[in-house]
Image 1: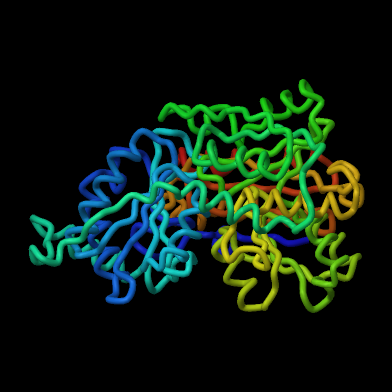
Image 2 (image 1 turned 30 degrees about the horizontal axis):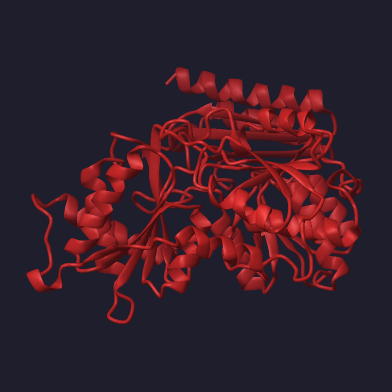
Length: 468
């Protein structure tokens, strides 16, 4: 049993403006405003630009507000003296990849990932396509605070202002990169799959990758209109994918989130296969290839199902937990020299294929594992019986939680639930790094009791917050 107190399970970082995955919020509400994003572009240009790598890459998802923020970033970067390469709508991992291959100093993605269309945000990458370090984020935050105190934005000399260009073949470049991670000599011939693009950034690239590898692809939610991204579709709302898989008698289904760094799958029976299930399939495949053992294992997170940890231990594969956030998983993998890790929500990292998390590439590796084992997705999961897990999001700001987490009713409730779970499950209580909510997660041998305990703690949090 692993219990996490409100203080130890937080994924919040004390870096101004930045959450778990960049800067995110409601469009029109600070900091997600054009004037802030203009200053952000300037700060990134000043902090990240260098003489050998003067260009910054900008990608985006399909939100209507992306046009506005794209222009603001472009202006801020140009004022700082940075050149700009515009990619247009493209998955977040594609921007990371092209940042590296275009030899840029940084990459920016305008996206709020799985959030509704009225939210937006900025994700940032270093020149190798890696998530920024805390030190880099702090340097950008410091400059932003300085700029906020000024009446106007500084700019470079006339002959040093940056210029912009558009990369017209960005989608094609990325599609070819994704295909290159699939085993040579293999194809997806004979496989029928439904691909849910979430009306987001993968609407062009994802169907193209799978089709060009030979699959019969039925694409759904692939008609973005600027406001339908993630709306009742994608990796956070898979019911329509499940229905489509059954309707078309497909072999499987694949769902991405709005910027396609997350992926979830559905087997031919319409059952959800989340990140834990995909990690299990991949871990079995990697172990068979001699890439995993008791010294080289898998990195999960606080939210990874306990059943995954147990079955990997039975298979003599090392497993460690990290804070929630794919950048923390990646940092732990790199520190350990391991290859495979990810989150229940579908951020999967296969560092032997790509140095950054990528939903399309993760799905391809699962498909490669199925091809090698000559098994369907449902059969490949036979060795994993997930422990019942209930997650409840309680709307609450981080600032309020910093005060309430020390309240006696919440501490007493956590203590009581932790005692009951001893030997039977886990409690994880943490503020989200991407939304103003507190996540209450309970695992228990019994589904009904997991739900009861999660609801019980969520109620205590709500009542304590209401009482002030």
